[in-house]
Image (cartoon, rainbow, N blue to C red; front, top):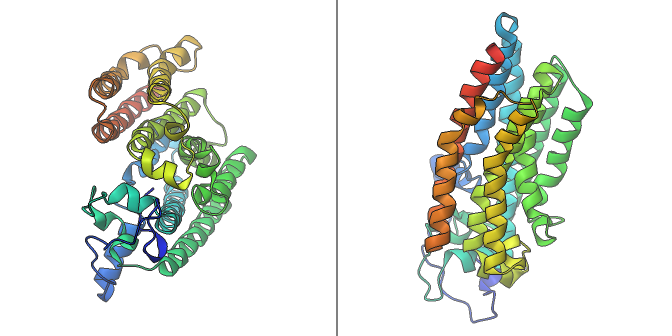
Length: 338
């Protein structure tokens, strides 16, 4: 969570500093489109949309010849709505990060040189104003709510737990660092893990009306893999987040405590499928199918313990996430088809 403070404020009260990489307001339709896509972090949150692979491989394999094209419409509407919801979360996060100075602290060094590519933050570069970003976030959230409502209305099934889960995401997700500011109240990690779970649970519920134990396990993994990316980002952002009062686990605990927290998440990831197999919720061979993910996860955490490079660990977390999705798709296609 990172941008430039309003009116040039610095988190530590220092004198205003020239904004580095300032490009000025966006111009032209193409320029505005690129700018708003950057605000929505479209390039960096693609992994959220991989939930459709988990949902469709499980449902299509289980439905077999009973699969109907209306199912694609349900998932398509949900995914279009998801784009609005995720875009709203990113836009409001940037607005807050700009106003409180956390993005400035995390993206620009004390010498004024960028620490990360500033084009990711159009408020920092001056391409957008906070007012424009707030309007975009509001419209994106309304778009998401409308499309999610339409997806539920035309769905073959509308179980109460799917409707409730989607509704909770609509109400809470955009308040990660805006509104109620859950990440400032020690609830950020809960949202980061919980909201992605719903991206599997809700659309599968609309398609099938029931929740197989294996799909529920996969939803938990989907959320867990998101936090195993975010936890390393939060480790890198400790100083900036602490300066503005954002209460992540990395901020609240010691370096050792944070490493233990990430280690506990890693262990949960490694043990969840074996535990599900032992309980009869997953086929025994799923443990072997998930071995590529396990190898990448161990590499990610072991290298972080040795070198402490949080951004490298984050990148490896993204690779592990995508590998895990491929493993889950394989498990679904074989297990549910059988």
